[in-house]
Image (cartoon, rainbow, N blue to C red; front, top):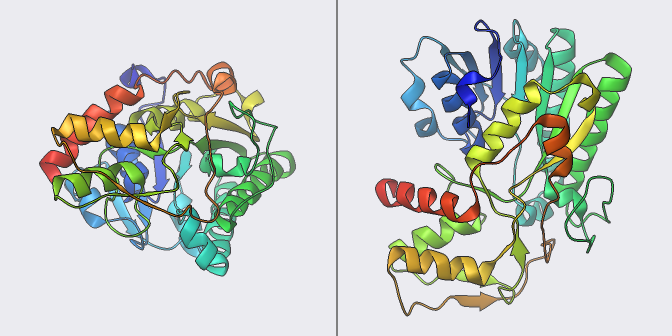
Length: 325
């Protein structure tokens, strides 16, 4: 993929918020492998120490236990930083419906704090995680930037608001912001536990443990599942994108489409497990029926070229969970 050849200065300093989480820890790992200085800011509310313990002895790595809802913590973490990769947020559409006030405080307030801190500390680039959920009830496929529908959850609203702040911070203050709309990311270190766990690690865990997986709805709903290394690539490419791309948001996916039932069958086959039928339960509030990304804008403006298709990513993910569950 050519990560090692990306033209960053050798003395570049990166801050990864939410760096002990699933996506954040993969970004930290890649940056450290490239020889860069990395700060990880995480309050460990959803991130896990074990995701980043492997970096503890690396002299180029610093862990900061802190909360993005505290502006002074954000400012201190941004001091001397060239690039902020803001992954810190609370995920899960169903949980956001149960806890809208908390999501407002963390996802919107925390991201705004980070943008303000980056602005005041002279950060060069601010790359932040958005979500395909901003497309809401739009039935158009594939999803294209600028053709969003009505929002379906507080989580989606928080991501839409963060995108608007990203535009304003570029227009008003000159902070070069880049929003990345992730589409159903999966891969190593994604948490398979809990009622809000993502579907792929949850299916793998349940099948490996002899449990009966649950599919909400009829299973024919589809998603653009995207292996985590593609998302790492997008974050790094955004740090080097032309200024003309600043203040905008981009679909980050592979561009495919898989139904939940097909995914379940693929995982069962890969694990050599036959005859275990899933349980079907009612569709959850806020869930989108179909999701598939047009990634032309990211290709053109960020130089994004995802290497891992669904099958390749799923094989890598299954192998990782077999070794680590």
